[in-house]
Length: 297
Image (tube, rainbow, N blue to C red):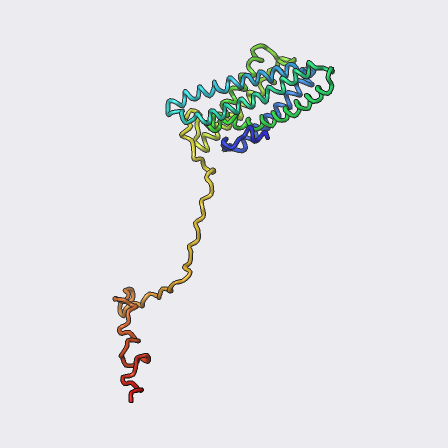
């Protein structure tokens, strides 16, 4: 279900599958590192802070993504029109809204669960099961949108890498500015905060470099300058075998060359007879009537 919703058919496949694997590994490693730091190193798992960070991420995605795309549209207008990009941009914005809503719903339900406590045990357990399913659903959706970044790859192949870098740095800078080191020491806190944006930036630069070297795609170029891409052309159609005639005369062999001139064919019509063999009234024709009627008395 997450694949159908967060990676619809109109999103083009990645040109470099190895980059997509690196992105998925980065998401899984980042999640494990975050939970490990909050649980073991920071001295306890703060659910409220985690919920606030999740809502902050949703707000950042909702506002920063359209702003970054708008800046790139101004850059692309220098070399061409952007009117033809309205359809993929609308699809990407709908996908962004869908993911933000899917991210915010389990957070709001978790606050409801925290407010219930043990007053209503049945409702508490039911909401916990719903939240658990939504968390798995959002995580599966995050694995999908990490590659296409809400379908912006349909607008420009280099746009997902740029959006990932901008979003990750804007989510990490407030912690650096405010000095919120998650209860860690100075050195370990800075490493923990900068690990995510530096990793995302490195993978994005690798993706942009491969797109430029292998396919000639540059971020500043207009999207109309992309493609066709090597290696993505489908197999050529196999021509149908020539049909043999069901019936008809078999062509006669070519005539032998004339004497003294071995490379020049015999002149004239080679299929014409000097005299029809079955002409009526000619001697030697077995089907010609006799000269005298044998039944005349």
